[in-house]
Length: 275
Image 1 (cartoon, rainbow, N blue to C red):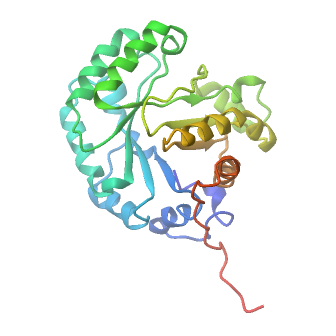
Image 2: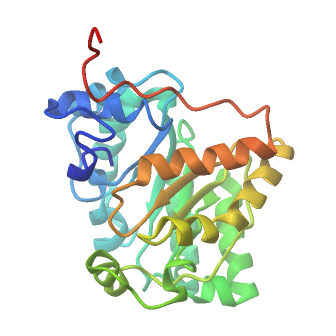
Image 3: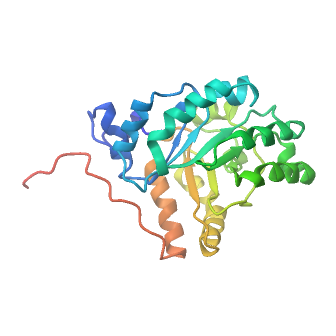
């Protein structure tokens, strides 16, 4: 996402045309979750505008539409899948992974369905799967079955770490809202591929968010030392400070791994003056 109202005038200029917002977001971070595609497949022209607003090394992790993953549950959605793949084509190598987020009801018994679906996908893209059924995390056998489904196509397993968020009761309206909507996911820190992807949910309190991500600083630094290329998305319930938090996380990892490339320098949110 890159259109949050709370960022206007802080992280991106205000007012700012809709077709300029992603370009300014890309001055803060070098990757983005494409979550809007879950609700509706964009036109190829819209996606082409995303590519035009970003440098060639900017990365998108783009979510498959819910009609494929949640309504049809990976079965019988050939037309919708073809339309989605055609729509994201303008991203080219900017599409770091196509993101298959599955509902919490999609459990170990559905692993064969996932394996069949992944085998039908074109090898021109890389894929990452996010599961939310607790058995995949608590049952070693279920986890192995899932990993075996992902392995033939080199798909990654995306962990959504909500442990810091659910560690204590909510203290703000945004946290109370998220408390009823976000999944309580067991922690997973194992990478399957050379391109791991992590989704982390902290708190609206910056100190608690930073405290909660320390394990990920260790894990990500270790992945980099192994030659992997991880992508980490930092969220809070209100996401008001997410761009700055993402850069802070990157800085912490970079102190461990000085060879890690710095993030781009953001453009000023206000025009320069003579004095």
